[in-house]
Amino acid sequence: MAWAVIGYVTVLLLVRFRLGGGAALDRLVNHTGLWSIATLLIYRCASTPTLDDPANQLAMGGVLMTATYQYSIGRLVGADAEPDTVWRRQRNTALLALAATALVILTATSVKYTGRSVDLRLAGVGLGTGCVFAATYNTFVLTRICLGPLRDADTRRAARIVCIVLIGSNTVLFAALALWLSQSATGWPDGPQLSLVQAAFTSWVAINATLHAMPLVAELVLRAGMDRATRTCRRLSPLWGDLTAAVPQIVMPVDTRHGSDPATRLLRMTVEIRDAMLHLGPYLPPETDDTQRTTAQKPESDRELTDYAHRLIQAAQARKAGLPPTNTSAPPAMPMAAHDFDTELAHLIDLARIWPQAKTAAESADRTARGASPIHGSR
Image 1 (tube, rainbow, N blue to C red):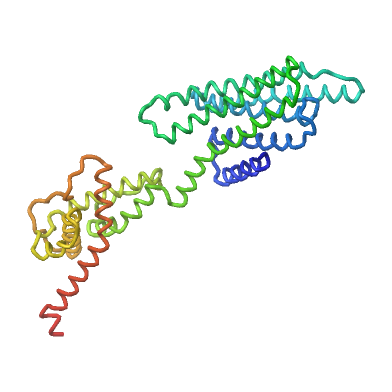
Image 2 (tube, one colour; image 1 turned 90 degrees about the horizontal axis):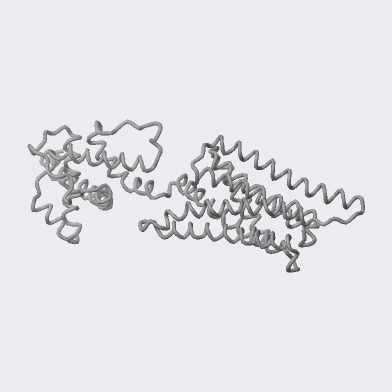
């Protein structure tokens, strides 16, 4: 399992580095992943499950270093601290963790070199106390952060699951470290004391790496254009293109700061489509018997919208041709009233769905009319 987790976290880190992101939180998450991989690799080198093994001494130091970065993440997210302050304290905390680990390793190496025996229980208790303290703080901060969404009735089920998993994984790691600390301090019960810590830490790394990967997935989906806003923009694009071609003056200038944001682009397209409909209102032809016969085969839910699409296409063609308006007052922009953005967007998506067929039918009817005209027949 450990090798699978190592490969999994390594792939996620490579993707994170590839995507960039120099924010303080991104750097803390990256450092947490690097220390997690290093610690799991060191655990693979241990020959015995006791603190006498230098690999386990170094691995416990890695656990402590990983916990310090989680400590800083908790401070940055939970306490809304300044990033510079968090990084300064993180450096100080990391130096203390490195010093504690180096002291244990140097003491054990020196005593072993001189041929004397040494009881590392006291050193292990000191190192374990630091790990337990950091894990306790992380568990407390994450629990406090996650309780807010859990108490909110409007929180989505996926967010609730994430909060519960965060609390559970950190609690398990804290319990394993606390149990190991009590075993190191009392010497009871006998057995592979560090195996439980290693298993809990491996599971903790896998769970937290998965949760940290969620923003990566969202970013990859966004870059691939598969997010909901981008997909909706693509669905509205033919409708938007035809209407703005008829009323080009309603196209708003793109904000260089937020113009590439899919949500902003969707909002801008929706507003421009609505404005184009208002401008084309005076050009809408009245409803005729031919139009009613054209839409008679449509379901009752689509009939009125299809009729509006046919007339809107004719209005766009008339305005592009420079013809005068046929109505003195503009009729409603949509056949169905919308009182909020989501409802209006749903109506526009329905209109965009039937737009290509309506446009094809309108162009076919226009070609037929021009072919039957006297001027065309005399040629």
